[in-house]
Image (cartoon, rainbow over the protein chains, first blue to last red):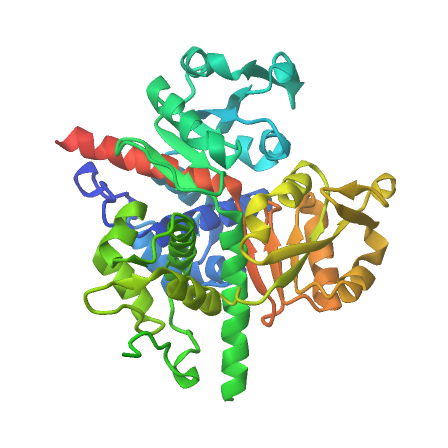
Length: 226
Length: 226
């Protein structure tokens, strides 16, 4: 009963998949990996959802974008769904990452345990401060910024994480694009310009707080009315 | 021509506003603040959108959740829309924040310039390492973890940022909730349990990378088919 097929390649351009669904895929993946480490071989959409605060309908609807993964009367096979989601997210292969900017944030990124476990290998670090060149931080060598392009190519880095001050960010991004990276995570609190063929996520830490204040304000409004 | 009224309180529970809209509000706000600093007094939805890679229809649709803000033939008044979005996001008042965990990530958060400019004031830091107690990091005093509850109350912190190892996160979160914080940003790569009245955002740095690998994989699929 091959009930757990992904849709064929013709159907998997994923062009119409909302960003929120992709974010939830990451959450499902983490929870499934947790379940796997607890020895749970199967899980139902209701249980997976309730562990994350979603309904079972939400879980099923999200996964439907990519194929059919459940087995009637059983639910999902944990390891199978982990593999399927990694394939969908493109993390069934290892991604080599370069970090630019080795201040506190860069160091935090180099020490972040959640990258390696998800298939992201930080292969090099780069900083504009010549005094940092040659240092090893969390086992990764720091190179001078002048060598950024060369390092990206030599290490075959496909992704770049930019943790430099806002004023330096666009220049670093341009160099990363020139060197051929395919995606960039920008932590500088500013909008950067990129060619269309390079994917990009901006991590705006204040916006995470704003999501919370919005929710608090919303609750407050609701209380005023009840 | 009072065309820029927010909906009345009866209509502003915002219960049905999708999370993605709230995220985009943060982006609009940053861009509007940038426009304001460039001296631009008005902006059209098309220009605001194109600076962020959205259509004008998207901008207008997002704002419609909260009222009507534009003036016919003019567009939005920049400072007015900045004020309105801050009010919607709840950041027209100042929020006092405590940071727990002063490792590299905690230090990065303490030094992050984007918080203060958006109305978030970091009033205290807490760490489990007794050697860090009494230190000043970025002008903020570090307190021992045993005093967490007392510090939250004394500093009237309403939000907590948790930058401790995964194994310690739930315990810290419980203490923050006990002390009365209204919202928590969790940076530990794990799911935490919270009572319903406390808002929560988990910042999973690997999931930011996964959004990019998903986009790269999507492009790759599309190319195979063309």
